Length: 138
Ligand SMILES: [Zn+2]
Ligand SMILES: [Zn+2]
View 1 (cartoon, rainbow, N blue to C red):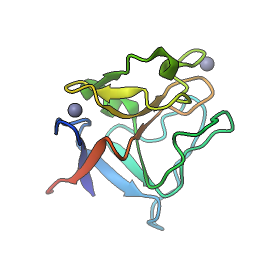
View 2: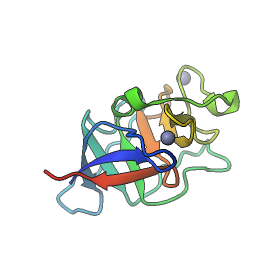
View 3: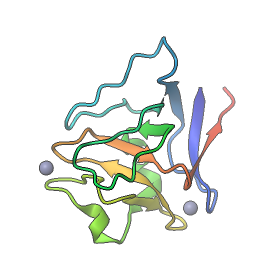
View 4: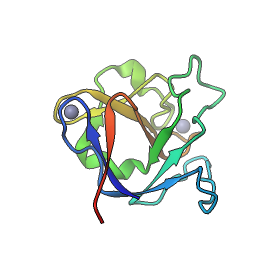
């Protein structure tokens, strides 16, 4: 399915046009979660029926399903970091453990969590309240 993420607050686009794969689809290979490795290629996103959880997360702001996972580069142009430095922890990148750390560039609403640390995959997880997935005609 071709789709694009939009901001539920202001309607601005939040991602490139993406090809969405569902982890419920038996033909879709399960995404690999490896440290520092992008979970998805550019232009591809997953709809995951399992939450992304690490043992470091306490409490866990990412304990929900379904989750949309994208390559962080695919939301880069439309988003920016939140102002709250407690959300921006990590040792050499963003751990994503403090709650949503990415906001809409247009209206500053929180729209998801980016992980770029040495012990996390390279991943963006869309916040279901802040983002809307719209299907694109192909
Ligand atoms: Zn690190
Ligand atoms: Zn917005």
